[in-house]
Image 1 (cartoon, helix red, strand yellow):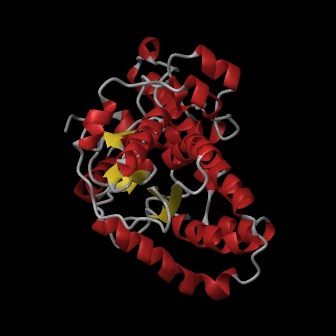
Image 2: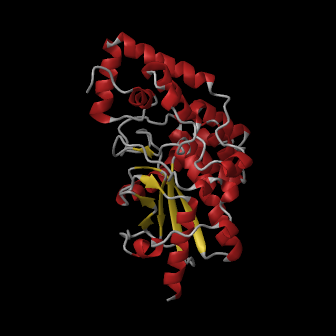
Image 3: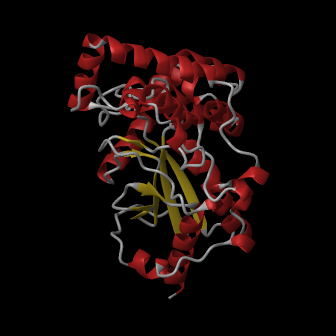
Length: 325
């Protein structure tokens, strides 16, 4: 390691996204290095000042960009780099979406920068993009034993953490694709959202509380489905990811989710969450979001980059062709 850690790594450590021995090294360095302590404090100030920023760009702006506008977290990193490294001239505002919350390595996994169609308003059948060779490549990929949904031709299983920024972006973008298939072929494509909270309190595969309210959020969403309030509660969770706490999720569960027995049922529902977590472990899930389409991992670059909506569409179409044969 150089004399001081990279500012982006310090930012990731501050937010609990660096784990294991490296996290311990950074913690020790921050304790003993006044300069880096000041940087971490400045990161917190920058993050707080950006709380009111809008993450999603307006549709008209999205159409003008060749890449998706950077979310708040990446803007904080860019600003921090400009302040502490003096590289303001090299900071790009047009960049890839939020990093996936990945436990396996220190890399950051982004939705592909070549896919402007990540914007929900652009993921339309008439504007669908064809990727040469995609179907042939898809057919050669490893297929894991994911249990098919009854009656479905294609089963999509997505492991999410409701406090993960990339999960918000992927779920929002992919849902447009799923809705189109449901409209054209009702029941053919079934989407199953599974819980994989990145918090050691309810996920033994995670060594830290990466997302402090992830366990409560998973339980709250499950209970809200019983009351028909899941969409509203999910919108709240997605809109307030950076400031969620167990207490704020419980309050939202009562006020938005109309859940009156959250505490009484928490432990029992958490067992259902644990079953999803165990399934994720068997499928080698190492971060969120992780999406499987009929058992095939919907990621590129050896699992490092998330599929764009068009790649999800092409994968589903390839599976539907296979079923017909």
